[in-house]
Image (cartoon, rainbow, N blue to C red; front, side, top):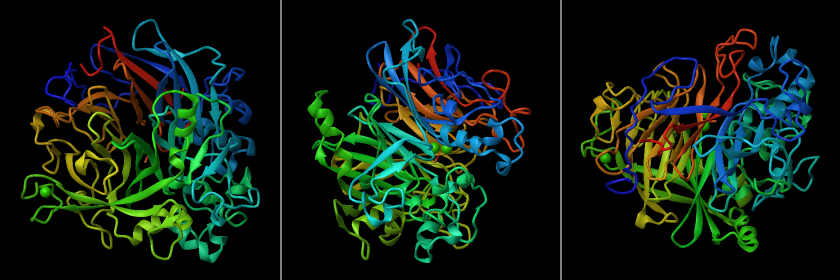
Amino acid sequence: TPTGGVGSGALTFKPIPPNRLDTLVVPNGYDHAVVIKWGDPVVPDAPEFRVHGQTAAAQAKQFGYNNDFVGVLPIDRKRALLVVNHEYTNEDLMFPGFTGLDALSVEQLRVAMAAHGMSVVELERVESTGQWRPVRNGRRYNRRVTALATKFELTGPAAGSAWLCTAADPKGRTVIGTLNNCAGGVTPWGTVLSGEENFNQYFVGGDAAPEALKPKLARYGIPTDVRYPSGSRKWDRADERVDLAKHPNEAHRFGWIVEIDPFDPDSKPRKHTALGRFKHEGANVIVAKDGRVVAYMGDDERFDYLYKFVSDKKFMSGSSTVARRHNLTLLESGTLYVAALEGNSAAEIDGTGTLPTDGAFDGRGRWIKLVSGNRSYVDGMTAADVLTFTRLAADKVGATKMDRPEDVEPSELTGKVYVALTNNTDRGKAGKAPADEANPRNLNKHGQILELVEDRGDNTAESFAWSLPIVCGDPTDPSTHFAGYDKSKVSPISCPDNVAFDTTGNLWIATDGNALGSNDGLFATALEGPERGHLKQFLTVPYGAETCGPFITKDNRSVFVAVQHPGEITGATVENPASTWPDGDFAKPAVVVTWRLDGGPIGS
Ligand code: FEO
Ligand code: CA
Ligand code: CA
Ligand code: CA
């Protein structure tokens, strides 16, 4: 039991040291197992995985590639639904004999499209431990959502607007596919939200898009001077929808928050326009004191913004059909805000990480209203304009340019909100915004964690206080900060990406792109009391991978992580892999569960 209040639960595990091993490492006293990996059957009649001659039809029934978000939604004490995002594909690590995207067959491009999306997989507990495994032939709920075929309904004020209409969908209400689903969240009503992030890389032909549209495409990272930007996935040979020369509005149909109801396998997933369109990392919802729901969201790009959405309607508790149906409409109408932050210290932040004169990176902030229902608060833009081109709206109102806002999650126990600001190596460069108190380092390689406390403890408030409990890096680097905790006792951390909470309210942080040269991993720290800032490394992922997911079950017995892109090293292939995890042959992204051997609570 925690002593000293919420978020101060004992994290007594022995931290693991940084390493570059091609294996998953957990602390002494813990075990781990792969739950499901790329190619495993999801839909009951899925064919066996074959890396040679893989087909789109097979992939559309099997677990997709590059698992990112992980949610585990209990059915009962012994069964649960695993919901996972498949963000993107590494064709070089998927197709034997890979010699470049141009040499892939159309069928292989379709395999890649089918390997994107989401999976829903029924799990069962293994005996009475914290280990979980897929139910064999999970027929009732198992489902694949893909970029290839799944239909989505657009909801909210921008649905049906001219921006979202295409030749194939003249009403602007139905989209095929979801792209680059990164992080997400489990809602209080038992659905899953998923962020469509770097959708720009799937579109080609920006050079031939209508002139009036080009600045809008460019603000979303779609180059308008070449047909194939560098990093393009070149899917146009498989699906002409991604060719903006032919279908200029198609790109506007991605970059939304998706909601899926995993308990209703026949339901059509939805894209909620009321939550705005940007490179959505994810969305996490909390029920505010007055019953309205608040979704916190980050736009993962250097110098982009932090957002929140407040629903019009109130959450209805209970599991009745009426409550369920009502709650499914909560994200269809409300108010979208963007954040402006100000520091409070007299000293100029010099970028070396020297603490401000008042001893803390902290200050005040306000939520700037962009749109409420159908009413726009941005000059010269309609509500549909603001929601479809949210970045352009936020540019106009003086929002604060942040260091790549990744996961943004409120703690259910305290209502405080935690933001992973992963890094921003362009901060302070010529012509770019310089360091400020919330983004305190120029050429920021390692990122920081921001804590946001809404005024009056009200998540619908329009003003807040903020601070930086952790400024990441090697603790011997003077620019780091661990809430004042003894730096000789904390683990080095770089590039925070996803965050989660255990049931005592400790913060767990997964990293992506460790700029300290070791493998990525998972860390935990207390948030309140004397242990605040005592960050310890809990897990490392295999070589070349990033750590995604993290999800801690409500009974505090299991930690799930997604091992994304193991062996993603330039020049690596199926035949010559940089990682052979998890099977010893070639790299496969997989979801892993870890638990304490003695069945005790995780973290201790
Ligand atoms: Fe897909 Fe922002 O990480
Ligand atoms: Ca300060
Ligand atoms: Ca991420
Ligand atoms: Ca990432």
